[in-house]
Length: 252
Image (cartoon, rainbow, N blue to C red):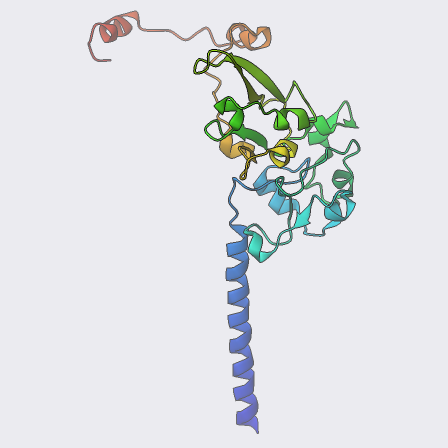
């Protein structure tokens, strides 16, 4: 009896270890999300901070009045139990009071990121940024279509039309959708409205899509940016001889 009990205990221990390892492996796979398709709710912190703060409670999903948000499963390819949305199916409807944000108990959805002067402002949201596929957008073919433009909640701001002469026909003008990444909230309404089989305007993760110029470049025509030149360290001494030698083909 003692030998049998010991054997059963060993079997149970081995099964538990296998399940624990397997569960950990599955969880690690689910946590490796494609950064391109991650569209978090309004006010979501940067992805790493968000995942540390989110407790997978689902309260933001319950608070969403349009069923936009859903909790990720293993099949979704992102961290299990975390909220996200797919704009092609159901975009963010830009609720004025942003109910999903105050519903978050941990601050993973940070009200400060979607507020102006202490008041919730959905126009401050940065869920993603819309990107136009110029090769497959029919407007760039010369076919008149402004579906994405007309649907934009921030029309003529986040998304506007650029008029350009159609050199091919010499008669018609292109009405080309252009995104202002500074204003685009990433709500995805434009993607949902796109008429092509696969959307030619897609909302993607801002951190992946947008570039960063760096502090070494200054917009001289912007007063606030030009002040950085005035405040810069002017004590740096340049070696004129080295610069001249370099320009003349010498080595520094």
